[in-house]
Length: 302
Image (cartoon, rainbow, N blue to C red; front, side, top):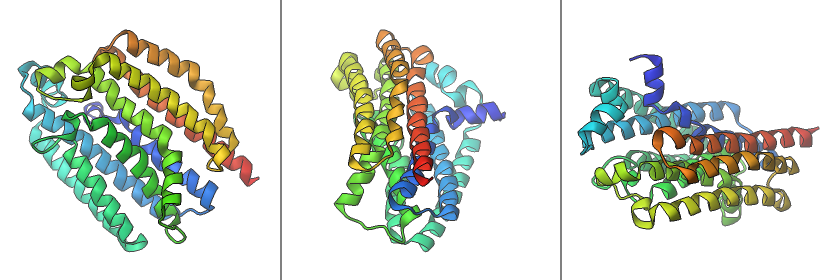
């Protein structure tokens, strides 16, 4: 398997969905709690990244075996299209999962049982996303679980691991972390929504009942637009709540870019042509938000 094929198998283009929340959690830990644990954060990042690759490989693996459409299995799914050995994919998933779990257990020893419970939840959602009799990705819950698990849980884990010595478990703390993570949650859930919008007919052919099956494309596009708007509104609100430096307000400079990408998806929902709009919005949106947060943090430290 070539490197380019492997990177497509693990869907490297979508890894912003895990990297940005992790780094955002570190920025919030430094800004609000004035506390960082660098070694623990590095181990968590590697464990998280490995498991994220497992989830995407498992998604392709299950889609390959459970596809009702022969054309999809042989010409669309990367395993069939690139003639990748399914056994090789299986062993890669087992190996990456084992390494991620071992690192996770080390983190539990260092930072306590909350890491174990949060890790179990994330592992469960990761495996159930495309596995079992009713995979989450085939249900109208995919956007909710993907946004919550990757957008919020990764930030929560990142903040906890950086501040576990002083972290207080209460609704106030969790609520503040939720608000800081909300923009990324919305953009991550929109990535899956864009995918489901573009795959609407293919999903019907393969008997997948995503949210588009129930609400239709028109409503799906409305929700996609509204979530983009809400993401910017929450970022503007954060400095007023003392949860982010005022520099994050510069995130609004990408509004025209997001508006153009949004308009492209509304005009056409074709996987090979316009799904990339969801990827671009997530990439540019989350990285701009992260960068402005980081610069604002540095300014405040001076």
